[in-house]
Image (cartoon, rainbow over all chains, first blue to last red; front, side, top):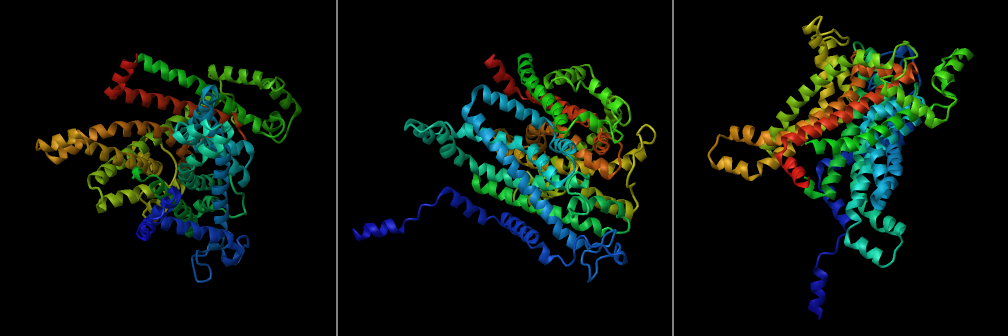
Length: 292
Length: 319
């Protein structure tokens, strides 16, 4: 009897699929570096008032377009503002745009995709054709058009990016729902008399989440670039509020005598997007090891 | 083949309908009376009344949509408020510049993407594979407008090799045209090269594990022949199809590239239209891009169907 108990005790404890995926993620160096950099930027954005050495809006006519120095590590811009402080404060706009626009896309895309996949029939056909129509408009062109009609501001840029990213989530959720709804456990839930809504929310939805997490992470990377692109075009964050995209827009006019104005905001976008891409790739491998 | 074409066309019609509804709907996002906004700052009552009549603004929404879509079918995408020219004429005027840019970009993307993808798959898990993967990640993470500025800094400001901006027609000066287009084309093709590299790598890895490649090797064929003639030929089909689809994406990327390099193309047209509140041009460009994308999608599907005998056989069996 004692032996039997000891044998059972020595068996590896049952690990949930989610935990197993997290353990696999932790073993992927690239994903961990990505996560580290993302966390670094999040902390930078939260503690910007404490970390930034200068007021990002404070101008100084005696320090116009000064090269990087001990006083201004990243140099100053065309009206003497500290580039490092603006880069630090600019991380807020980028991260906010990334997270908010993807949240909008998830909030719209997941329920619509779940309904299309679960209900099927003419509703599915209608939603699918509407999704195809949105996907036919290239992401950035649609975002530009929406931002143009809504008016230039960071909020409208986030709405425009969120709406433009929605069809991808509709399509993904629908495809996953179609796969999951024919699984035995869903049939079992139906057999014991659960309502359709309960089955969709309690049994189907949790099982479509992993690919959505992967897609959301990669979509944040795309949204950060899109926000920078819209701000670069003047359709996102409005001056004088700092944003990496609008900083690049100004910097391109001074590239021959103040190149540092362009280097740092661009490098920041690159690092943040790269980190989200590394994390997204890692999550995909962790949730679906066969995809490697 | 004909059946397949009909099937595909049947799915395109509703998609195009929804695209038209979406683009028509954009105008409804304007706060207040569209005529007041379109009339400009002067808000001349005569102009506002004229716009109401011209755009049928006093009619119910579905009727206005029918007027608008009827115009689209006749090739009337509206008129630019700023330049007083038909939108279609403006698009046709600017399009060749963007098509040249996009074609050069896709050429660069195919060359870099396929080469890197093949090397990465053949030399799997070596330093070359890692380098190609790093290149792909770099390509996907670099904002092309920043890359453009950095290349201007290097090749125009520092080295003085290439012009930083502007456009010369190839019919006037071919050399000048290529000198001005090479940087923007590289910037535009960079991300596409990364996408194509990843797809080529994955397709090559799949093909390299097949029986016919093993047989070719067993016959003692030269490894280069096995890779280039047997493996790459088969792996390329989906990659080329993807390349055709990416061409549509390049039209969208051109917006930023043309802005950085001041190229008077299709992308610059939409940006200028946005800032001049020339909404008919914005709608026209989106409609044109979406239709081009859907057409390219159809052509890519048909090309894939033609070059892939297995799909053809399956279709015939179903018929």
